[in-house]
Length: 455
Image (cartoon, rainbow, N blue to C red; front, side, top):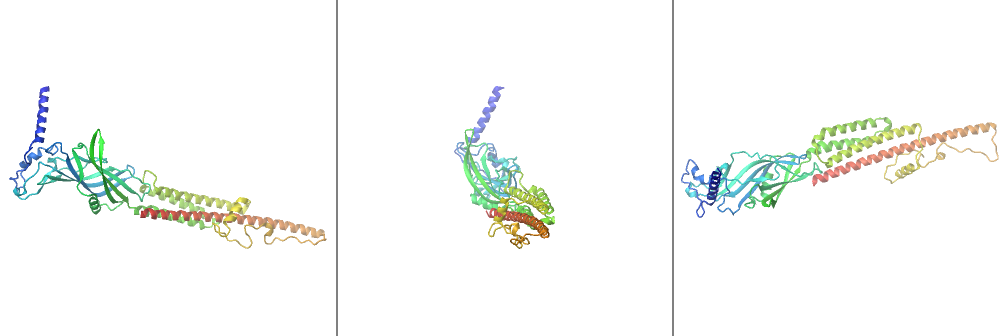
């Protein structure tokens, strides 16, 4: 039993050595006398087909050079959650087979013919970043020239790993890699370029079928050696730069959000006393939340893009505006019933902001009711006139006492009115500050969008 296994192993080794050493010192010219109007004679290529399991070299120490090229005909999808790039490639590989050659003059002038790829040795070139099973169609053909140059093309749907950076979504650009390498052969297979990188880029941009969300910016390459298990593998790394077209997201996300924020900013001009501002702002806030829930499918599901920060700021600004309106409404209600005295620091700050040339606009003032008036200087309040040396009589004393009560009542009403005016002025100042904050936020957002779009 052991002897039979030994003889089989020896026979296989002798067969392999004979196929590799066969033809040393002789030419490998195919006899194409059988070529004619019925095509090539299959028996003339049996010597080539029998060497299919072995690398086609006359000297096993000589490496096989495989030139590769590809054309990206479609960018199918970019999965931000799984960090995958789905594309469709036409891969082209070119190498020499020294066992294939014929004289065109003896073969009806034939310089190139197609053969079934399953009958030829094919290099095991694969993409390192590939995550799915290779779904290349079967029964493909390869073109073989009379000098033994084989040109093999195959279509590939590639789902490759790509490290995505979605912070600038939807104005993001991605740089994905496609690394071509051999799985089995180390230094015995060398990789080269069949076309220049600019030719690959131009061909891919010209035939790119998808004109939707992504566009191809360019392709660059780098050569490297991969060390694995003490062996060196030849590699070619292609850097594919793609960019997202932001028009869909600007129209469906940024423009409606900007309109809602602008309407909320203009609602600051609604009079608080009418009672319509709070319901209006609540309706806008609810509408904005419904808008975010409806458009959530367009946003990336992982990471925190810049547009997510923008939406959070819009929502926060609308909530702050609603809280400010509620506070102002409550403040004015209290001020009209029993106005509290304004603190001195708030009075000083209000006086500073409403002074001419300051940052905040000055509220309209009527008559002499300024912020610096005291109750004794209010109109309609007069000091009693008493003649020197003249004492009031009983009737005059009662009249004077009634006059003093009337003056005290007038002073109290004037102080109350003055306090109400101060609180109203304070509410106007808060509305003006909030409105300017809205304007600053919208201007910053527009400038940021323009800069990112033109980058």
